[in-house]
Image 1 (cartoon, rainbow, N blue to C red):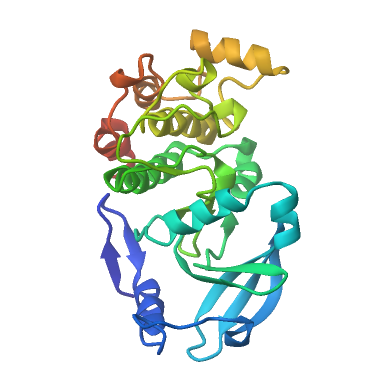
Image 2: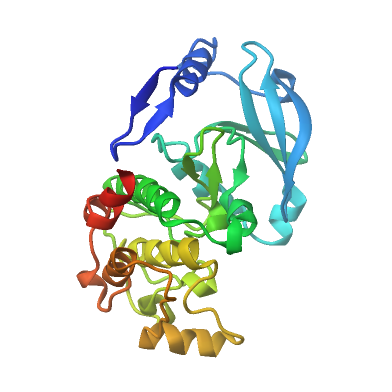
Length: 297
């Protein structure tokens, strides 16, 4: 079985390349083409969300398999998220990286909007985390996933994209156990690299967002530190019973490291969860951190 290497040193099955080449051979590739439901056979439902469902689907011309996200326009309007969806489409359709979920195309009819997404066979990483022994990943698995996420985020930042909503629920897993960063609904494309919008998930919020300050793409480094901790412990470090208590713990950097965690993993997390944000380790340095490299051996 042939493999190719990503920028962080991981390998991916060549079947992924073959499927992509197959899609490129479609008459629509590189040409104006108006996709519709007539181009796809929808199969079983893979999941359900607030605005619709995700189905496995097959493109009729090539047999190419995708995950078809079907959303009702009425629900999008009801929750006032039309602009958020359009931003997600605009950003995700331009990102092409081995560890970022591809958005191949999108189309709509009178009632629905359809997103043809890359199929990640094992689904949400969150369910695998909860099903793991003791509800957490071992260090080797955690380090590999963290390295892959760092690689994806580094690519995003190089293209002036801040993800802003990193968490296990927004990461998918392929059949060959590689991660795919997904859900760019809260992401921002900005060349100035300075934002003030408060968004994301409570337990993952960086202190600069909690305090309503301007922030930059280093918020993703903070979230990566929280993610690494959750992989290794099974829950985020600042999780509390009330929102205010969570905010207080974030501001104080009130973290408890369980005894089973290695000094190497703790060292990486402490370098990501830093105040001020300018002192956080870079994503390139995350991929080259001694703990990450040691776990790859």
